Amino acid sequence: MSDIPEGVESVMYLRDGWPDVVVCKVKMQTEHVGIGVFRSRGVKFSPANMDHLAFKDAMSNIGLRAPDYTELHDHLAKLKAESK
Image (tube, rainbow, N blue to C red; front, side, top):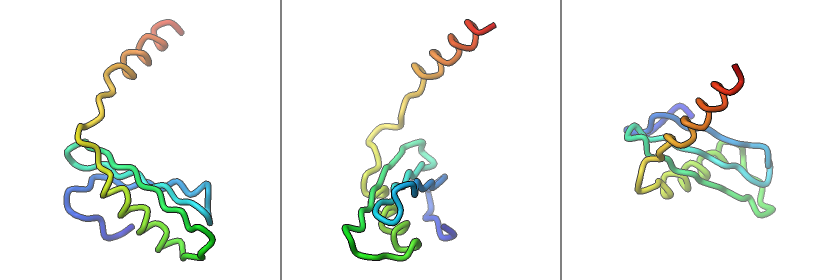
């Protein structure tokens, strides 16, 4: 995607369900995350259109809070320490 709106840090797509489903993850510069899904429901769309529609859905589903990964980071640090 070449035309990322202001405030968006990154955009990722999961196309494993192609041509039926595309999932989009948007990370804002504020650390907030949005997840969008677009299902074609039997209608054929171009890959660019599917991406665009999943992106629009992600932008409309941005979380009110930025995710807190502290618990996950602590767990990974514990696993790393135990593996030594």
